[in-house]
Length: 214
Length: 248
Image (cartoon, rainbow over all chains, first blue to last red; front, top):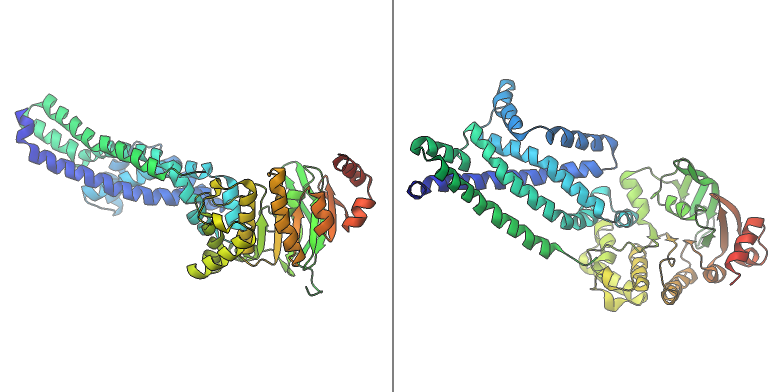
């Protein structure tokens, strides 16, 4: 156990970076995902097609491959970012495909009459979506978004492959230094649980708060 | 109430859902201040007719003019026309996540650009008029069907519409609640509101309508004043329909 206690400060840095990666890329994923969902339910066919293409392309490529394409491939066409920023961008873009689908599914749970009443009142499409449909859709979207957040936290470990100093990367380093693989990775697993379990609990709380009478 | 251009004109309107032709060569014009009740068996196209007038259902061919202007295809221009055309649905369609008051003020604030205080004053006045001012801060699910439908009427009226569309407004209601909704509608008709009402309420058609349009199989088979329509329908199909619904 000493090896864990001795290296607590390294773990702390790793955890901090994993949290930062998770939060930043989830914020990005929510923003992009909302746009994708809007495209997918839009009355304009080219926007719907663009949304569908995004989702089908991105979600069907392994995230590790996306990271490699972005970090090792894109510099040849002049797109160069630090490992940390690259990881945030790729994880946001990847998770956004799933967020978009979750939100779209939520939109479909809202009765069609709600949007019809909004349009009949003279609200524009963005107003109908923003004032009437989304607020009702998002309530049913909280649980799947919670799942996606947890998946994202775990996916941040992929950033270790491009030497982002996050939890998994720190662990691999420590193993090289100490040769205590079992203990170090055991500690790493516990650290991930410390992040994901409270996230799941928080989602449950938000879900209860967002429930409303229909 | 001026004569001249009719408020609503439908010219040779056709509309299909896949293989089913819901509207066939519909021609109808409605003057300002007029109340037209559209009746007919289910599946006759009467709801579709109502929904084409504010383009909730786009039409395949023909023209619809409101106040002499062709209905815009999409976008802001269409939204502006819709703001002037009130619509009441069979299933009320009140915004489930908003209080009754907010249901009524939404259009005033977001479409008409009215201040919140002004909108709330106006909304309360309308809720009082339809008799549910005490429910202003409730959510739709907490109200009875009749109360929800009256709230929906208040929401539509708040926009000061030139025209009110009622798509089977009482079909989802218990008999006791039908009366409270019809009372509000009769009052509106008496005030000179232009109304197109899809309904099975023959009593309402008799007492409030200037004309009754009878539809079957996607066509308007006859349009006549209610006295004439109920006493001596011109078409065999209308006679048959009336004998069935007035039999008991």
